[in-house]
Length: 386
Image 1 (cartoon, rainbow, N blue to C red):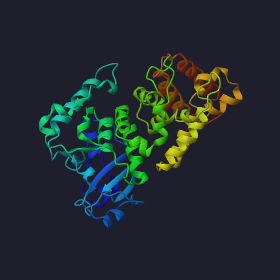
Image 2: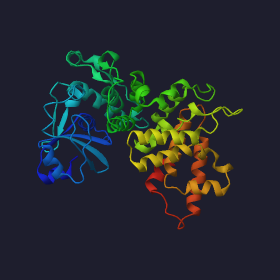
Image 3: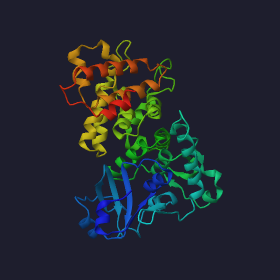
Image 4: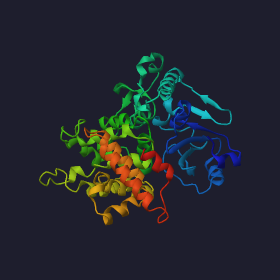
């Protein structure tokens, strides 16, 4: 794990907080990387290609790095950090040049146990990271004795990305008066949704008041009940959060689509037997509005909008005429749509038969179209149709 531009310029740096914790536990990195560099802001801006200035207190430069956004703290900001960036988890670091971790407040026993549990489950056939039993931090009284109350977003990110459980007494409720730029919220949402335990982090955000304040469209889902016959998890919010447990990958686009696929239900009218008439089209508009407000890249917004709009289509492939289904299956996004559909089904009482049927129809379509269209990434097809 390196940042080529800083290496070329000979600038020393270390990864902080969630990025260093991911590395310690051997987990995939978040879409946002956090670094502290031994250079001033001007030197960093000169060394980095196409830097932007994020407007976040404690972070001076934002650059693109191998498919990630990298937030870099310069020497200019290192001595005047807000409280939410100085807790023990945020100060944990990894120096890639020395290949060494720095743990100034003694988190190692807790993190070592979390890593052990991850490795134990990862090596067991038929088990996934969702099966990891979280480590309760109160089992380490020496850590708790000096642990300050964590910001709600920090605690939610940790809970989503690491198998740890943080009791409410160690969490500071979200400050509804906090004026944070869109990048802050985009980073929080992306880090949580790409975590193996995203459902836990989201529930913490909901109970901490963040969802109601920042994402009120999603908060409304917690007030819309589902039929218990089809949805054992209860309301629309809990169903949507539950879908994240069944993902085959931590792809951000898929995760956003899963969280938002039923976001249109609170606004959908009841039409006879159809309790949520047109919720997919409404949800596509709601999802796009949320993602634009949080500053997600245009491509991500459009991809998620498409996935939400068509998330029910895989279950109807055999009933649809060719002129309606073929353009949808021709999209490079269709393998992701199948994954959204599979996770949606998995969190209900319905079995996976319709998903397997949709995969069969799709594979036949690809075979019939070979040489006529640009086939989607074969790795994605294999991952999401088997």
